[in-house]
Image (cartoon, rainbow, N blue to C red; front, side):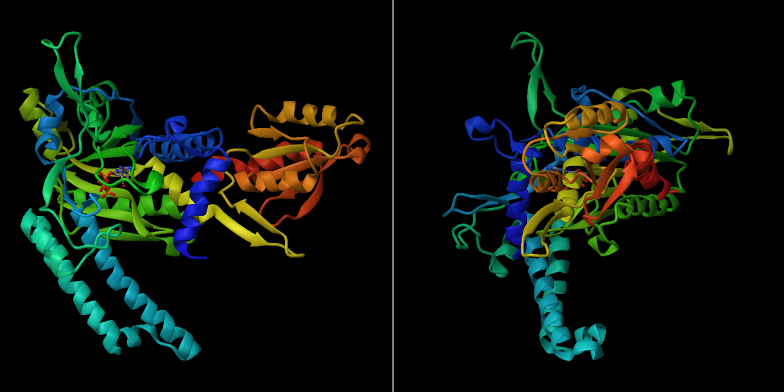
Length: 513
Ligand code: ATP
């Protein structure tokens, strides 16, 4: 199946089974804003729990906060967002569609890469086992030509970005003959800068109104609480502050479902360190974060690091963790070495001293910061797209199954009485009433067992139990495993232990130690 079709299927599966809906759906939606449904909210909460526990529970020197979305407007002046939180936009005059100039060019670079990969795949098929991919890439003229074009474009693009040269960005688009995917034309406007922050007014009268911004990142809420937390928590450097919360960006192009939204959620952690040690911690957090992703078991080949060409104004090193989505490798998380930029700026703008006295070296300094920043919604999308699976079973029947990591699955256990009579529903309810305090259970007595299994497969429930007539005699139920579809008979007394062991976050978290 083409990857585009896979993506479409995931989007409609998300709607059909109550994971994600368009915001304001009955009013035909609102651009790039989405709501999470009854299944989606459970999965999302589990992702957040996995992250939160991996930070706050597993690290004695990381604590959490929950800061407000509205903040003093000067914060965004100090952070540089008022002046520099821009994206370069370009319009196609024929389709009237708006694009990010940098994304158009990045897509072109990805196309060269795709061409190279296709050549390699074709040759691998032709030569079979004897194929040496590295040698082929180093010698094949078509691969070499594409590699050269890719490198040249890359260099030119990085130079234009670093110099903030908007004319050059436009020229690259023209020289590379990039066309609008809607109109197919090369009729482009100039490239302009566009600030991504939403603003609103605070205060009851227009005269007294104060322009404030909806935060475009949660990080600044951490920086401005640095002193509060350090002092009240008696924190010693190195230490971290974690936060999960909503962020808002008026994205220019927002067409990839929950990949790029105007209202989204971030999980950010700022780790404060002694100046000069930041590169060691940058390396350490890269390792810890990739481990967190890989523990989910979707396959190590689904992840890669992408080091930044252009560093943000506050950073001295930055990398993205990219995940293989149905539309290619895309950023899900950023890890940045933010230096002492933010704390120094807040010191300057607020007039308050934000220094740390380090008793180990008998010195005061402004701490340096390593930030890990991941989007909950992008993480959600990466999980849904890896878990979604269509299988053909023996006998030709097909099933759609979400192979979610059991610890993240919205429902852990489906409780299914074989029939609606003979005391089976009562027995099923009794079992559920015992388990529901620890496990998210769903009761279902409608339709055939086969249909009920399919419904549970589609929402990723790792376990189903059926209660049959024999249950009333031997106190045993049949437990069915989602991925293998294998069934076994177990005693009701053992259910809690069997299912809890395989569905708690603890086993995932233990892999991180
Ligand atoms: P991009 O280059 O894709 O716009 P970014 O580099 O601006 O992303 P960061 O500012 O580093 O993103 O934000 C950290 C994380 O927040 C990203 O890795 C992503 O997971 C998430 N994120 C950022 N913007 C959005 C958005 N518009 N919708 C959903 N998630 C987002």
